[in-house]
Length: 184
Image (cartoon, rainbow, N blue to C red; front, side, top):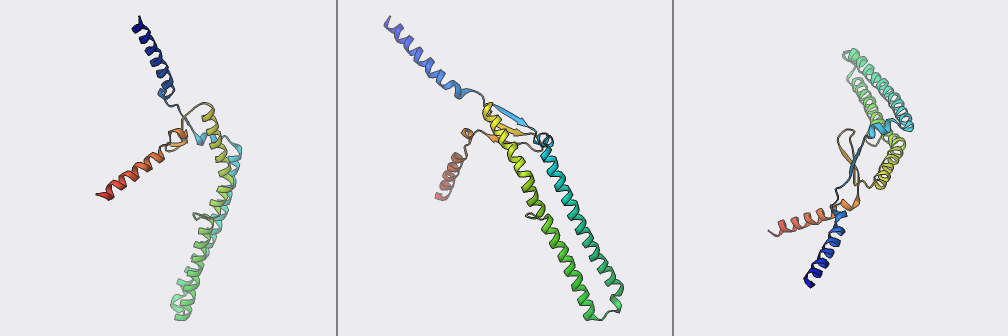
């Protein structure tokens, strides 16, 4: 009888212990979004894109016009080159090169990596993207979703539950591997 009571107690303890681990055994919940679809249905995003396109076209026309001026200067130089003294030829070539460098600088100013278009895009688009990402995080948290991927373009992780972040563990492992390799 005592062994039956002990077995019953042992089974109860085992069942409680098992039930405590069930939440850790559940599958991770994943979802996806289509950010292109989401952004295309936000009127502010469309307005921002229109502004960016308008600026881009305006600046591209300015650059094209200035480039045409450089081409005209070069053609005029070629037509008169044989008649010009060498000092005048050098001045004209220098003027053409100077004008061409100005056009290149203007193009970089507008369309370079930190140019005016980039800055305007940051100003107009980034706040909208942040609202979308914050909404994704809110929905994921409320729905107990562990990972949210973007299906627009190449798959991108937009949200990951921080409890699944193993970056520190990987960094520690890399450190252990590096220490192991340097000791050899």
